[in-house]
Image 1: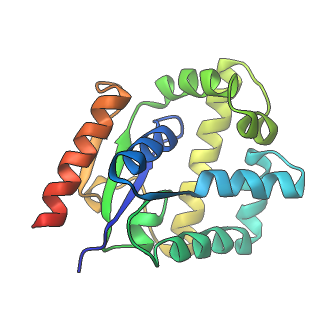
Image 2: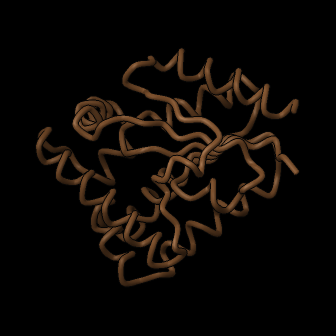
Image 3: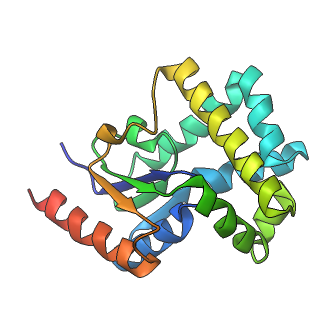
Length: 188
């Protein structure tokens, strides 16, 4: 049975947050971000997001707490959820993967750091190369943890109903594609 929920995943910097915000606004849905939730946890621990990822490698309750929040968000409908594992926890959702090379991600993240206060507080300012190293380490850490915990590869594209290249499509085009394909999916 299909749920009126769109789950969005992708590499760091691919535009998950902006896309989720705009898709939710367009459809009149609520929004949940596990990335923002993680940043808040990092701030509570008074550590960076990368340090939280390292801590999560040995303290499994961190990922389980985030996963529980995602599952809870998926209990109601008319929601857009950006999360690495929401597709897995909410299989009845319309599952979207935003694709982008990490080389391009680092530039986007650097630009976002300049204007996003929560991201600055949880990740700190850095050079483009430092950002690349951080996102690569974070991405690898998350993928390893998800496999170790659940035997889930969140980058496996066959897990998704729609894959959108956010390098070839601007934000407005990405949102248009997702909304259009979601409407077709939910009606069938």
